[in-house]
Length: 152
Image (tube, rainbow, N blue to C red; front, side):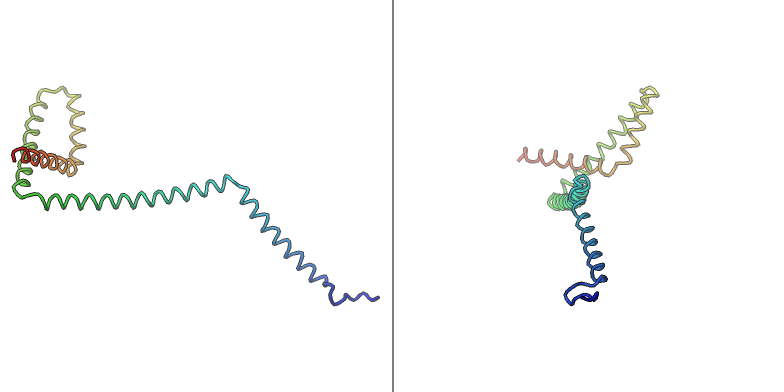
């Protein structure tokens, strides 16, 4: 018998390569099993995914609601007769004037600490003027429409 390997026996280099390949496969299998066993990491990844999906859906819904509100406002404005819009604007102007007069009268009779707090609230209202005016106009419009329906 000679020391030469038989034709169907692997050579030492082939055995080394096969062992290295098996080690690589075993390492990948161990990593996959460790990943499946790490419930905390899986839960964290799933929570992050769900959170991102919720944020995307919320942004989408917010945009849709904003679009619908804009369309509704335009539709109401288009459907509202001009005399009603004029009355609403006139009523809003009267409310503004009355509020200004009342503010001046009250300001003369209020103590300084209360006056400071009122000035702070007024500043906040001024910074949010467009939404407040829109709300006042909508309220005036609704009141006028309600009154007109009662008279019919």
